[in-house]
Length: 241
Image (tube, rainbow, N blue to C red):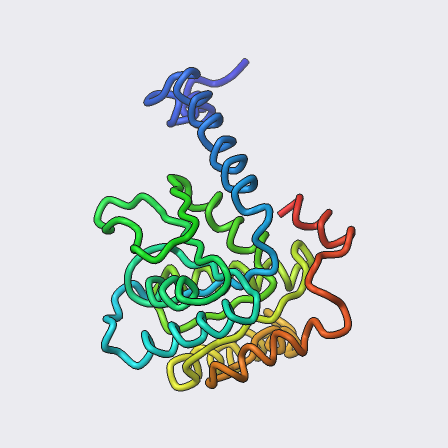
């Protein structure tokens, strides 16, 4: 017999606010986002996912650098994927849009965020963050991460976690803006490595590279002997992110 005092602990609080029908429609919505995004991005490889702050204006040096990196990547044959918003996301799409390869925006519907930027050859709208985040990783041959806030750091650590744990294939993860990132890298070395929470070798998953031309060269160097297409084993991993 269940004691009366224990019953509240067995009740799902969400059940008081939603019906089975609502939950079913939510699941279908999530499935639809995965299906639509996967179909529309199927042919974009090789691609590079670029991240950075939405709050940096077009007159900032980081904006101009992001635009330059994206243009070089696009002209080199890489589709460029960004979060689709303003700031450095816009700079990434803008640079790619002016180049040879597609500029892709994975737009997220937020209460206080303006609509996607105007430089998207392919724009996909998401309601669910985790579906959007999976597309950043699944279709990327490299990550280029410029200075940014919580969202940028979230995308960076998400990719680091997936690669570190073997849930995703290893790809180049390049940080731009050494002065900005150095404090975080030092903290990881002192605190995470120092307390045995990660291995020292885990820090080798990221590189700091400043020059746009050097970033493109580093990505090509990484894939020189392995090719951009994922192996069968790597594709299987991506299905189980």
